[in-house]
Image 1 (cartoon, helix red, strand yellow):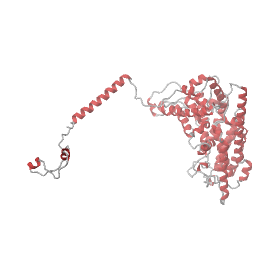
Image 2: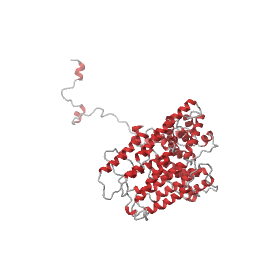
Image 3: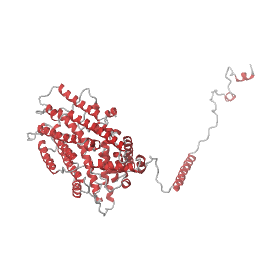
Image 4: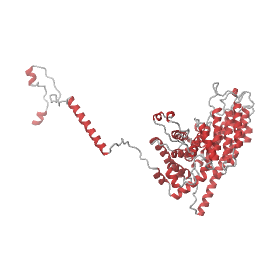
Length: 558
């Protein structure tokens, strides 16, 4: 055994240390390092001094930064916002193309929506400089020759709207007119996701913030209340005809969407609305102002119908006391009086008549509401059956006029037209399925067949596609640089398949009716759930045809 091994080997028994023997105390083993000196703890004063030194260092650095950028606010990291000029340059190939697109909008889109007008004398450069956001929306709508670029423009516009309104809090006529025209052709980029309610309320928000819905109000009566503590302006704040025209456009669009596609409180018709309507009708600054005046008056009647008899809840506490038929007869008289005064010499007389019969249908479709108790009809001369027949007749007139429109115009019609058309499809389906004493479903099918009406839409869409192909071939053969080719809008690509699906839902409802025993006192049963149908195929009470494309079924056909 080596010396090292013997030294490292533990002894076989325990030898007490000398200290323990000398002190005559029991020996206890202690852990290693038990007698090491512990570092002295810093006193409270020392720690406080170190903290104060740190604070002083931070303040010194802050003073140095402030001296470099005097008075600079705190800079938070934000997403860079490109100027609209850079966005426009990114999407528009050349000034020549932009001029052609502007001409397309002026000549083929603007006549359908008389509430936002580009003056004939305004040049491309002037419009782009004064109203860059509105200009960009116009370019997006008129970019019908390049659907991928139109889609990219639509995506970019949504981002710009968010930055302008939420990040920068912008309030301008340029922004409002751009949003209004974006809403007017809302269905152009429906494949990007349905946000109808959002866009409608953004329009209303900017309009209210700009104060376009009322006269100038002295600050002591103004809202928000903070304006109370500012001195009144002594200069006159006269509204221009452009301001008033834009406001009436907001009234028109919110009223139409409320009547057909969404259940919300639209802008009310007030004395100021009537003043704007009167001033524009007297001035007639543009030829399209006559059409604007007629649309506004007609929408006033539609709004009056909605606030008078179209209610979601019917109970004894309702403000309606007379029989429903009396209200219908009174409002019908107002409608007939307006029809006599309509200017049918207008270039837009056909869509105006369509709009008239839509409002007339809207008046009588209260008879399709099963929530209205029979007692509300009473023994008045205008019965529920009378209203059903009147509703069917008005719907027939509407579709006759709609089907007379040239196929070439279908792809350019505004959203307001198609949301009305889609609402009439729902009304016709309900009329075809209604069960009521004296109401004959077979007569309805022979008078205005639901399938035939939808097939006409598919046929018109196919005709429009053929016309586009022919026009593009002619333009190619002529090698004209003054013509932009056309593409079929994405929202129209799946119309035929979507029509077949709507017809299937309608037929399933009818089949379910025939399988169930009919009650002794039949009432329409249009809201019942259908077994075997997926929830996304259920037809809502107020179906916007192009909103229907935004349902989950859209992804299956896109």
